Length: 436
Image (cartoon, rainbow, N blue to C red; front, side, top):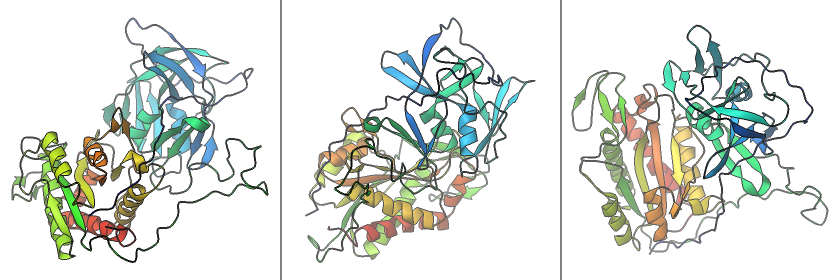
């Protein structure tokens, strides 16, 4: 019998604001980004945002604008140069320049940004008029398109969109009106320890503020049934090959299919062999393993849902194995966890166990563990199906197969085995202090 978990009710919204500046400030405006307006566009009111922004636990003050863009609400937009300026010295730093000849915004990942004097300044005094604009970014030679607005010659993008492109994580705390930015290697608190939403109200009798860290799990003295059971969900398969990429050099897949340099590769070239290897490792360690598939075949979401429901009283946890793709620029691993563990608990601790193993194996983290909410619970179907039957679950995205450098970690039997071994070690590490 598997352990039952207590669900937490979470309220999370993506409405943003930004931060304020003195209303009478006369900011220097440097127009260095093109104003290519969409056809027949009409200007929209851009309000100076009032949200606090924290980057790796420290407050930063880029000038942001809140723009009502559609019937679903307003969003906050940030200047690209401000984010480049703030990311200098971080592991996701990037440079920004404007090519006058080609009229292109040029960005290069990993390069130090050179300020031009326009950073962290408003695009005028007070609220402004924003115009929808077609201003793609050429990142490392590849075109990246994001929704953008031009305000007095400067181009502004959504913070989440920039996070996806340049590799940092963004979250929001509506209760305290804060936007939280975390770079891949940062592991500290979201905000300074002394930052309290109501700083005039003491949190304890001696008027001091003492953050309470998540409790360290105590080792259990016994097990519920003495036999760990893991449900392995093999992402994609059969007629659904999953995400695609290009092989940086020739190699043979687990099916002994030769892929030439420049040839197409897909998730199915990696998801199943990793899953089979993980199965063998877990069974060798004495665990029971249930597989959603053991051959390259199509498994529909309806079938996956049935598999999960049929094993609700048997499996202690579910691990869904995937490999990612975005735009050829993203790299590193991502862990997706159930939203009920966003504030801590078993799901959060399981994700941390995976992050720890991946980092120790030399993998870079693309973003901190993702907890994404949809209209009916978890955004991701597999996590939602598992949550509906009270089963602990995570999704692992070990590498970006459309990134020529990132995918190299799994283009060999040794790479596949290393990924599976990291998963195996994370699972056993977690269950060394948790019931099953």
